[in-house]
Length: 434
Image (cartoon, one colour):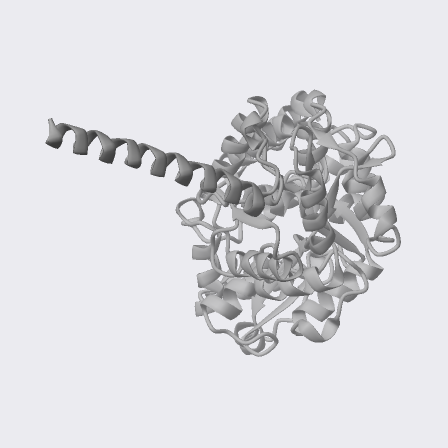
């Protein structure tokens, strides 16, 4: 009996000790984590989940620098980097769609300004307006009006742009141009004269890697911009000009002619593979967003304006095709104050200058510090301030996802078959989904 009694007393003591530990744990949890009501779903207070597809070199570095800056300014707010890798954002967008439809939004998420934002999430009533945030931070004259229009719907602003990439740029091998006496072309006639000279010299004039069809769509949208001009380009995607317009037909014909000058193995290459042809001197130039500048400089160790140069897509010198990554405030998150603190840092000069030099993009603000950017960056910043800004079709800004899917399919077929009538008919049929 003595042994049993001793065992019983030890057992009671253990139970009391555990109860005391649990009580201490609960108390410390409230002190350290603030509101303990986060079990009700959504993001708990004191934490911000940042959802993106930035996992590659450069873009991940930029994101981490932005997070470091935010944590320095707000050490009491925990940051969860919820980046999803793969598929150039395709995987992340699929995960995001599932979460948004399941009423489980992240605190904030990466989305291209324009119709990817407006027709996917604003139209579905999934985003909170941010007019008050813009007013509090005096941002209305810090971002260009045409850029604010891209992230607005019905007089409400729904996201904060963090960066700008330009889509209507050609990058070229300077040694190849010099060796063959090629001048930078400014219009389509000069472009095809240069392409003929390069082809006769045994150099592939234009590198293309359309293993993913968006790269060919990007070339086509820039030809449309060159033929139509910025105003009518916008009207085309607003449904005010039909895809059967004679100028759209002309653009398709120019597109077919340009495809006569690309590398034969284009369908088996992605954009990086095709950019390597330019770096190696096997091809002379490539139309690619200016993330290609980062690839040339950071991955291939080429020097800007020594090894490679750049010029606006022919006939688009005064226009700037925008690809902008933005972040907003989804409806249903509980930590709105913390999210707005993050968006405030994201939209600040300091935040944009921490992120963009590493990402290889330029800031969305017009008052950022040029000294933090290389020669290409400062040139792009000047063009951004002084050019007409137009949305990119290939990157989700100019039209809905449904139209873009069909446009990519139509362009992909055209690259193979070169049938102008079929391309025009396919785009006309898809126009109802814009």
